[in-house]
Length: 79
Image (tube, rainbow, N blue to C red; front, side):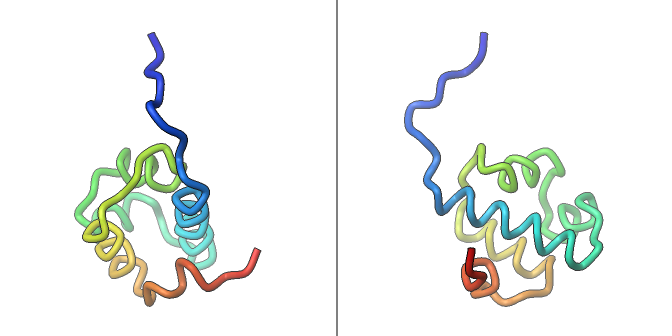
């Protein structure tokens, strides 16, 4: 039985996840290496990228550090 979400995922959560994915691709990084550097399971990192799970600020900062970027880079890119 598929789990039913109590509330919809915020468009901002989806945007941040997409931006993380873009940065990983731009830098030619492997998902498993980013997850390792951020001290996350690869499965959880995938959930954050897909926007199916919201992340804590501390988790976001670990991902930012693993990507070697500034936090602003997750939000600055214009669509």
